[in-house]
Length: 261
Image (cartoon, rainbow, N blue to C red; front, side):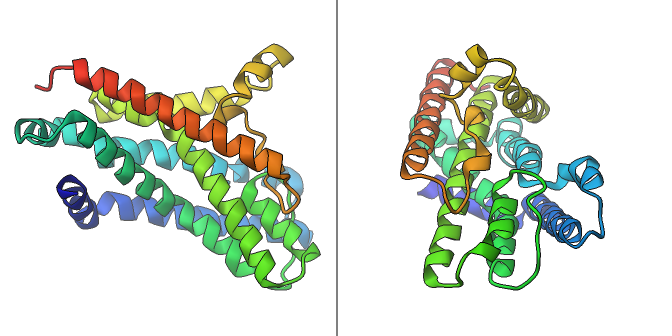
């Protein structure tokens, strides 16, 4: 708990998390605006699906999440904060769990603008196009077919919650890279390249897809809709949870054997 309080204090006083949050907020607004303009024929679907797709939550979570892991957490190695924690008697397992919790909160902060926009506009009469199969657009474009009730609110929370958990599990490799490399620039690069490569790789052929289907990178985000099945929810949660657990254990093994200098 002491380590977690120290992390919260450091992050709250740092400009980096809030700068990343602001970038996520701007991206979410641009992405929602693109969806609206496509639905009203003010923007071509080709343009929206091209360069403007970079503002989608799938792209921004990979990019901003990688940066957050690097500059907000990994710099603790470079600033000797981890070394001081170890010499101060804190167990390495406690340090890893503390970093994981801090990381989960950071990713939730970055995803918050997208979740907030879905909740804000799903109950309005504004038209949105699902020009990309992302969770946010699935919600915005599908909300028009739903009755505005507490049940709709619950469904939106469920989709956003599961989406966030999947993104966290995809970015969990950054915790492993953090204890492996101990350098912010290497963690940012390795995490982003992993997210950038493994997603498209999963659709290359049936063999690769069947293997990647057991990882968060192989989960079909287009199924995160109001009509997603209980089986899909359960499988997605289980795959993501196991992935987080595996990389927690891998991080612990690396950190336990590493020398903290």
